[in-house]
Length: 357
Image (tube, rainbow, N blue to C red; front, side, top):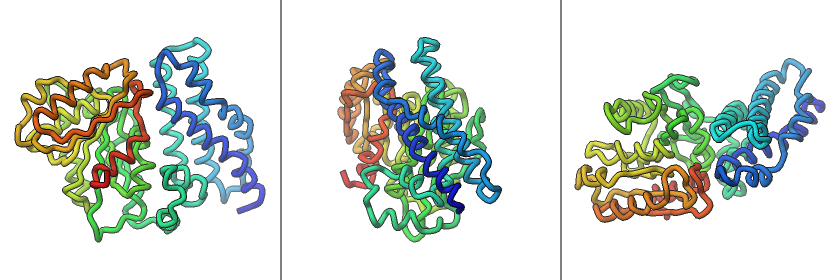
């Protein structure tokens, strides 16, 4: 690689990665009354990224693929910040914030392929707690195995009913791997929600599936086309990769978490563990669920004390109702969590899935 290109990469990567971390901070700590304070705490890494963005122009053709990926990731991160700054300046509302944050997973999707060539990018997609793990780093430094990485099956933006999939690059078929099926929130899609879990799945060694609902959101009432679709997706993945039937986790955020209950409490559900996050629940769900299914069913319930959409009292009542019905409930109530996805809970949930905590 030419010295000039290396210099440009060294200039661009730090503010780009810092911008993505700042966007993750905003997404995690977003609470409407505290938006201004959250933005102040996130800082202005986008200003530094904007300043070095011109350095990606005019690279020699052999480096076009790297340049294109860095351009796409940088531009998506800058669009996200531009949308957030508009709201910060009084020109927008909470919907505009959510719309701006949708650019963050697009930036990660553009950047991820560079992890095989640029160590700082690979490190970014590792759980911070495991970045000094020599064994993991050695695995990630090896060439990717066949049929691993990220796949999208009929899951282009705007499509419904498809799924995105991540298989760790060090996957081998000689052992059974845990599987996480992660359901997006009501206004989301699987392609974007994949990035809420990829770092931890890559670090701890789990196959990750992120479906998109067949309708505008999951089938929380009326006809349920989603349960059959999730079964179809799970079957397709299990037919191609060695999945551990004793470690099948269904998790989700908001409407996705609520649908964990709707489909996961059915007697025929193949999922061995449920982890609804920031979800709502009606006691009738427990009453209508199959008693044999509920008895001993491991459920990891995560909710925020500041949740403005589904008040925390609902989660506490859910914990009590499920426990009374015989479920094996683990309950985590986060004092600083609003109606957001707490990515820091992924590692504890994976440990719980594997019987380590």
